Image (tube, rainbow, N blue to C red; front, side, top):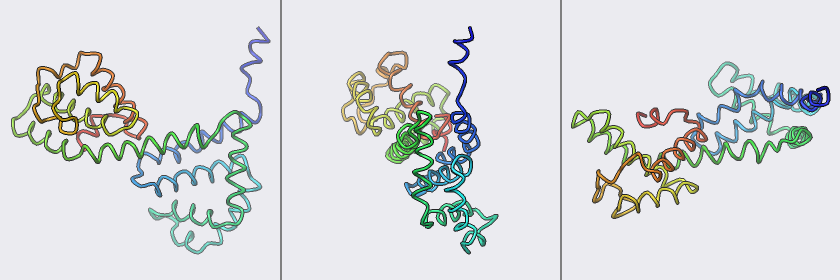
Length: 235
């Protein structure tokens, strides 16, 4: 029993890293509000800065001096762009690259690649989701307008959402094969225009082909920072 228990005991480095990560979860979650790559990178670097404050104090203290003495940061305290100004000031420090590398090294020591295992997944997920939503937006407007004009039922809304979710899947690289299988299943005339020759009797949500699309789109939404697909539909 003692041997089994010892396997689950975290090392001091693991405890420190875990505590630092938990303290900075709110910063990392900011990716869900980003709409550009630059905004995403601000969140990423703000996360690194916050992590350094906890587990790489020497490197952080060097950068902190440059942040504190930056006039733009002082002027932005309490404003909406205060976080961005702080990160931008930190980036200008001669020690910024050392800070980032120190954080990544501490992460690797506990078996975590912050860039590949954490950030790249969040960034890719958010950008792919935004791209898909953008491509499917006009279709969503058309579908919602038709449902509202007909005083549609919940079933009508569900049918409309299926078409929209198909369009989302078609514009997310990893989901495109599942979307194309669905297009074949419903005998779609043009994969890029799902309403052309639309056959409602073919769009059966109970089929395995649709479940594959449905679950994949919901997962993509979560990876893109959207917890509820219905919220995205109403946006």
